[in-house]
Structure formats: structure tokens, C-alpha cells
Length: 256
Image (cartoon, helix red, strand yellow):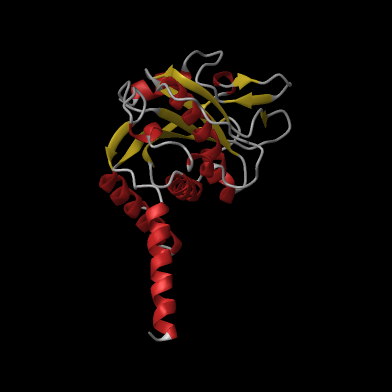
């Protein structure tokens, strides 16, 4: 047998062994339904249409990172709603330092976020996570208490976990803020669904979604109140549609 044929057969054998060593592809993925709420106008700033279009792209990029980081087992399905009212200073939670604020779901004015969503007709017990982005400009007398912050499950609108992020940071970093806070809520969801929450090093600068890659499939396929197992083919189709949106955006096509 010629030497090149032997070499080719050896390569094919090694490839076959490597493929056999890979874990079997999960037949299901976990569909995490996330509602992103955009507060366009607060007492410190007003978000432009361009900023909101950029935010949509950033959230799609974060969802893609979580999909890939979980080895195609976590489908972050995002719904959007915009609140147009001006959010006054009294609707914010004050920080421990004077002049520091954060848009909590519960403030001196009550359950402001839940009240807004109810007025807009958002149903209860549908979304696993509700994440807020709000217009914000840091300045004298009004600074953000956090880069972003979150609460666990059963926080508002029934079962949902909650996080909120001010749109005060660099435009191309909002995906990382979304990914970071969503992972916080996801760890709470895993615990609520009966799984041990993995340790996550939130101080790392690299993308944190890769913490999901070594989790057992049971985290993404077993039933619980939070998240819905779905056929993986549906999650793949959603991922491809998201990638197509990102490609159109990169090509300068206006956001739908």
C-alpha cells in the first residue's frame, strides 16, 4: 500500500475516533423566554432611535454567545417592549451614596416596572426573566449605583427574575452587561429548577457564557417552572434567524 494512502487512512481513523469521543448532541434545548423592557426617557436622558437599534444588536450578540457557550443548548428567546413615559427621579431606588440611582422593580413609588407592564398588557407568568435597559446619563448629582444589577426568580409579573442596566456605558459593551446579568438570573433559575448552580467567576473579562459548556444536559432538558425544553431543531432555526438579523445589520440594512 502506498505511503500516502496509509497516511490518509490513519487520519480518517483518528477523525472517527475523535468524533466517537465527543458527547452525543442533545435532542432538546432549554428555551428561556426573556422580556427586554426599554425605558426611552428618564429624568437624566432620552435614548435615540439609533441607540435602541444598537441595543437590539447587542442583545442579539449576547444571545448568540450564550447559545454557543452552552454548546447549542440554551435558546434565549427575546421579546421587546418600550415604555415611552418619562421616568422621574422618585421612581428610582436611591443608592447608599448620595445622588446614586438604580431602576429597581420596587422603589419609593411602588412596583413601578410591574405597573408599567400591566398597563401595556404584558401577561403574567409568561417570561422567565424580565430585563430592563433605561436611558441614563451620569452627571453631577445623578450617577448610576451599578453597572447593572439583578434579582432572582418570583420577583415580578409572577415567576420572572429581574435585572436592570442603565444605557450609560459604551455602545459596544451592552452585550456583555446583558450576558453578565442574565447569567446571574440563570443561576437562580437552575437552583429553582432543582439543579446545583455552578460557580461563576464574574470578575473575568472574557465572555462568561462558556461556564455553561460543561453542565450536564439535564440542566437544559429537564422540566421546571422556569425555561421550556424544546426540540433542538427549533432552537437551531431561531439561532439562524438571529444570525441573519445580525448580518443584515452589519451590512447596514435598517432594523425591522
